[in-house]
Image (cartoon, rainbow, N blue to C red; front, side, top):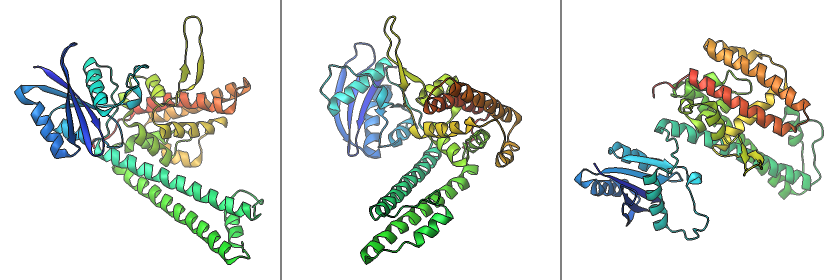
Length: 368
């Protein structure tokens, strides 16, 4: 059975389609554009599948989501969603068009030089969107607070009695009075914007917690909560961004996927390593880095963490305690060597990813 490799350059309105025939010297043809609708995509697949030809589609991951992938796989065709940042590029190629992009995808797909991304199921994608909504709410809250601080600073109002956003700070805000009525209106508008953003954030967090028990990744989320520094929201954010950890063959793959390994530019006898690569999901990486800060304290199990650990299997509890003992000692050792705190925390986050991978091998997702 012959195989056709189809490169799709997907946009909101139209899809540019190119076909590469099997074999190293197979012909490459540009078929034109088709509307980006399920009906037209189905017609395209039906037209190309004549004479029993096997179809292998590919397109770049982007804002159009995974709808095309799900439709084509349900029709019985192969489909690969490609990581855009890992597509090979020629340094001298300075011409970029939709036609060339689709042809390049078809050729690279035929030669096996494309890197596929993990495609979540619809339920997992919905949870990922909910997590992103919480992150957007947090960003809006921080922006609203910064706008209020800037307004107060312009008018010489600073709070110096402790940390902001405590009960005492809220009382101090309620006592602020401005001579100009317009300034009072602006002040109240900034305060109301903060309260609205807080309510939005809290509602989204409550919905996330309510949906975790029925989520197929719920058991993995509960297991990761056994690690120090990983709470409900951080564990859900990490799992929603990464997915099933069993797809990584070893912890080094997970570390590289998270962008926690150092970059390198070496040639011959000259070895040069730089900062971490910062590839992959940035929010999942940030959750590990934030959790790594908690390992600067001696190993211990807090009271609220005990309630989580008693519900976990013994192998997971052993991994969580082993992580505490090793990473706390590792943090002290790296700090004594004179390294910067940010460098130390990044190194701890990288090793923490290894323990996360080990837990992922013990706890598999439930059936969706």
